[in-house]
Length: 466
Image (cartoon, rainbow, N blue to C red; front, side, top):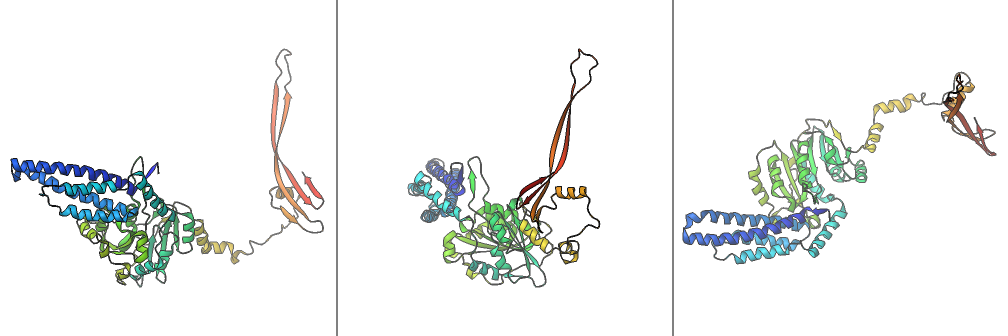
C-alpha cells in the first residue's frame, strides 16, 4: 500500500480535511454575520448569510461522501453516525447564536475517521479480505429474480452481453430456455475458459481492449468490479462508473440494463449517467445474507437516446438514501421489462487475447473443415505408394527430411533417425608469385554443404550411416 491508496481511503482523507476547513470557515462567517447585523442591518449581511447556507450544504455533502466510503471499508457504525450528523447539520438553525455544538460534533466525527495508523490498518485488512475473493458472482436465487422480470420477444433471436462474465453462469441462467445468443467478456484466463463452456461467445482479456459492435445487444448484464485503487502519482476513475459509461453504446435502443453494484456506490455522478441514458429506472436490494455480504443493489432500466437527465438524478437518489425503504429483489414484478427484438447482428466481437478454445469450437462446426478433414477426403488421407521404385538419391532426401523416422518392424526391428548435418570446409591456397620480393598472397575458400546422416538403433547397438 505504499505505492497505492485505496479509492475510499483517499476519499476519507479528503473528507477529513474538508470537514475541518469548512467548520472553521463557518465559525468565522457566523461571527461576521453578527457584526454586520449589529452595524449595517440584514440587507447588507445577506451575502454572509448565503455563504453560511452554502457552508452547511458543503458539510452535508462531505458527510454523505464519507458515509459511502465508510460503508465500503466495513465501518457501519461510523457510517450510521455520519447519516445522523447530516440530519443535525441540515436542520441546525442558521441564526442560532452559538454554532459550537454543531461544529464540535462535526470535528469529533472528522477525528474518528480511520486515517490514523491503527484504524488504517484495520480498514486495509478489510479491503484485503475483499480483494482475496477476486470477484463477486451473483448467486442463483437472485439471478432467478432478475430473469423472471424479463420478457423475451417471441419471433426474434436476441443478443445478451455480460462484460464481466466470470464463469458465465449468471448469463447462462438468464438465457436458459430462451431464444437468444450469449456473449461474455472476462479478464481472468481460467474463468474465461470456464465461461466458454457456458456461453456461445467469450472474448478473453480486458474489456477495455476488446472490440464489440454497438447497438447490437438487447440485454446488458453488468456486474463490474468496484474495489478500484488510485496511484500516488494520480487518480484513476472508479471501475464501476467506467464500465457503465463505456458499455452503454453496445445496448440497442429500448434494450434493458441490469446494473449490480453496492448501494453506497450509487453516487450522484453515476445517477446522472443513468438518468441521462435510461427510463423506467428501478432499484432493488439483494435479500438477506447476500445483502449483508456486499450491500449490493440491482438497477434496471430501458435505454433511450441520450438526454439531459441530470435534473432527475436527485429524485432518483432520494429513493436509495434510506436503506430500509429500498425494496428487496424478490419484490421485483415478473415480466416487468420487455426486451426489444434484434435489429442488427453482432458483426464485431473480439477480445484482446486470442481465444483458442472458441477457435477450436468454431472449426469443429465449420462446414469447410468437415469437407477438408472428414469422410469426403478419406482417400486423400490414406497412405500412398509411389508408382515406380525410388532411386537411392530420393531415398536419401526422404530420410534426411525426417519423413521415415521411427520404428521399423520385420525380421530385424530397428529405429531410424535421419537428418541433414551442415558442414563447412575451409581451404587455404597461395597465389603464384612473379616477384620474389613481394609478399606471399593467400586465399581462403569456405565451402558449406549438407551431409545426410542416418542413425539406426538396433538391439545390438547404434549404427551411423553417412
